[in-house]
Length: 97
Image 1 (cartoon, helix red, strand yellow):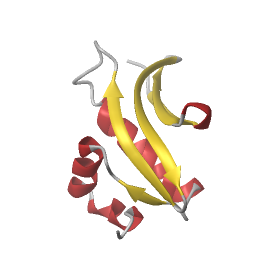
Image 2 (cartoon, rainbow, N blue to C red):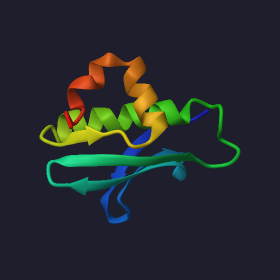
Image 3 (tube, rainbow, N blue to C red):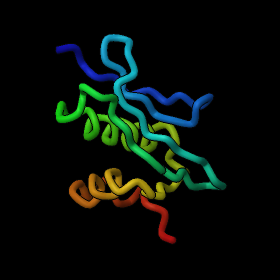
């Protein structure tokens, strides 16, 4: 299986998981001030259970740590919140509100 790549698509306000050039998952977001609200994660039918969701969240959070370190994360999406709860290294990214 090819490797999943995570890319930011600001025109669509989403991070995308791409597999062999095909979008197989996404995290929809909204930027408000100094915060980014990760609102919804979706994996395309036929790709559930392949670990793409976790790879997508990890890639998104890694991107934010490096490329947007001043943005604080609001994990409105329960999947994103659960991932951060299980990976405490990402907790410093959270918006304190």
